[in-house]
Amino acid sequence: MADRALKDIGPVVLIGAGKMGLALAGGWIAAGLPANELVLVDPNASEAAHQFAERTGVRLVGSADGVLVAVLVLAVKPQVMLSVLGDLQPVVGAHTLVISIAAGISLAAISAGLETQRVVRAMPNTPAQVGKGTTGAVAGPGVRPADRDIADALLRAAGDVVWFDDEAMIDAVTAVSGSGPAYVFHFVEALAAAGVRQGFSEEQAMRLARQTVIGAAALLEADPSPAATLRQNVTSPKGTTEAALGVLMGPNGLTSLMEKTVMAAKLRSEELGR
Ligand SMILES: NC(=O)c1ccc[n+]([C@@H]2O[C@H](COP(=O)([O-])OP(=O)(O)OC[C@H]3O[C@@H](n4cnc5c(N)ncnc54)[C@H](OP(=O)(O)O)[C@@H]3O)[C@@H](O)[C@H]2O)c1
Image (cartoon, rainbow, N blue to C red; front, side, top):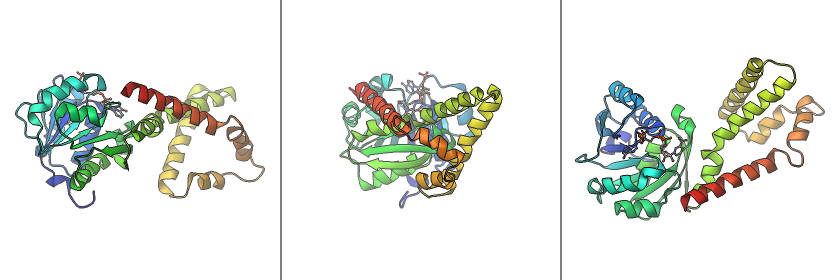
């Protein structure tokens, strides 16, 4: 955050204490949001939500009725969002900054549902659960610079945040970083399957593949060099890696496959948003 601390932003109310909501809430408490400034709203809260509330001292309630709200964070499933917005209208006013993380729900739909233009739309990804998320965000027309700082601080508590001017880019964010962790998990599966073909047991192959990705990700994190440089660093001329990359980087290799993969996700994201 540029110049404001999470402790000064006023009551934050999280609607939907599910997987992503609790991941965000955990990040906020760790980043210094006082427990008495956070309220979780979930009419059918899970065991995990109750445990979170007990552990942190945060209030968990079944409805937002009568709750004071400075920042409203919407983390319910897209399917229930429109009816949730209707219920929330009485607690939202000109004093409220709204942040939605729901896939496919546009700024216009949230603004219409809550009758405010002070809305930020964000798309986080699941590594937010371990504080290593990547979030794409876009601000609605009523969002002031100070609002953006608050939204940035809240989203940044779960990892990196990239802001866009054009809301249409959120579909591309969904396709690259939103769905991206699944691509990496599948890469681990594919590498392990190739290992099994070389004679490893499934357990051995999965252990080698999984730890290779964890280790490579840690190297990426530790070394700011471009990924291409890190790749070149492990590719000696005429060596084994060079032979492998001749296949992976060849015609119809990973780059064109990834382009098709991302395009499929983006088209589906656009479709769901209609
Ligand atoms: N998971 C991801 O990777 C990811 C990534 C980016 C964005 N998102 C977005 O994040 C949002 C939440 O996803 P999630 O995976 O965290 O889903 P989730 O685990 O199902 O969490 C949603 C929570 O909201 C609760 N809820 C339902 N109706 C409610 C209401 N009227 N008021 C308050 N809470 C209510 C649900 O309770 P019940 O279970 O009883 O219905 C559930 O606890 C979605 O919009 C999704 O698009 C998720």
